[in-house]
Length: 116
Figure 1 (cartoon, rainbow, N blue to C red):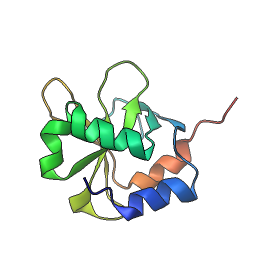
Figure 2 (figure 1 turned 90 degrees about the horizontal axis):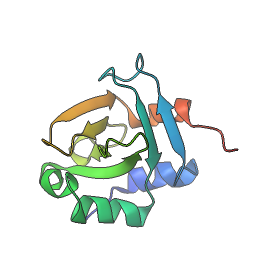
Figure 3 (figure 1 turned 30 degrees about the vertical axis):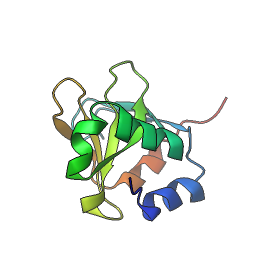
């Protein structure tokens, strides 16, 4: 699997591995709100290559980059076909349908939760 350098650089430069984010309903384009944690590199590889829905959607360019923290089990993805500054997606594990959460994944920086 080829994790894009631009994603790895974004996570590294902003120290985002294992950071949590909460995006309110009114900013989430799917209007559901998002509560997730950014994966480490090894978690990206595992979730995309060995878990669903990653196994089903990787062939369409989706790479798992975050884990749901609210219990739904629906991971968060970028799509390598979008390139740098692409969208952040939620892919539903029960039917592989896709929702756009934000149009530019860098917008998540506005919603990083402070550490206690």
